[in-house]
Length: 204
Image (cartoon, rainbow, N blue to C red):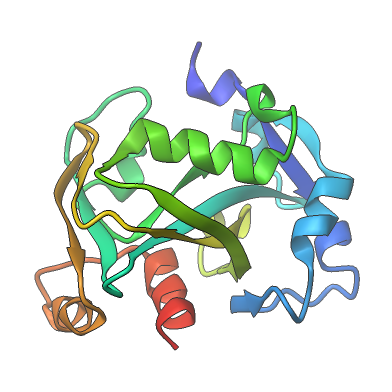
């Protein structure tokens, strides 16, 4: 099936932002429990239609992986073009793992369950997951793509010191916050906007 014909979870903007104000950047979980709003108000929409419907948001469970040494998993998306690969992100660096929530995730906690599915598809941790905790939300509306998505930001803590990515991932490794900061200063590396927002929230 074409990815744009899949049914994905969507939520009306009126449920997420009843006052009509769309905050830009990171929204702490303790300030607004949008996770509960999503779980109480979601429906399913054909992905191709959702991409151009600005009355809806597509929730993306998005996780930063941190190990017991305080290092954070980062990687570069490869240039391989496949049906499943998001070509708009090709070549960019990221720390977040996540994806659209599909109808197959409807049993149980759709946000957490879809996140674990994405993690198992994209990353092999050489260790154990110690905890999975939501810390807030990412909302960036700088372009038409970001306007129709909202990130539910999780931190996954692990005792893994190494990890391997899927064939669509290169240069994967656990980096210290200081190393990531220096990498971001390098003009030759392009970082996903959500990663920049998420890292500030996690490292603060």
